[in-house]
Length: 127
Image (tube, rainbow, N blue to C red; front, side):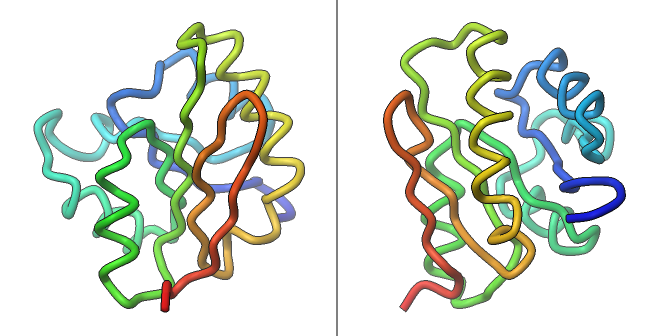
């Protein structure tokens, strides 16, 4: 991604410590609550990501359906599905996963099934 890394709005289910970790790695990460009300609907979060050229970081699978059925190639989505909710584990997995998928995200992708064993990258739009 070059200077500034990946731009993320992190959904409410992502720890502020993970947002700080992403910033430390050079990414432009913000919590959704820094831009929108804490009860903002998923569609509003997607609109924010689209407007600001950000990749949604979440643990909420509902975003996958919204993006897949939209027919659009943006915004990209990174969905974490981890066996351990501990921040340290989340940060470790994110750092490793981003190294492998960072180039796919700007072109439009859903990176899902990010778990302890595999990562699935699906290009947008979903056919």
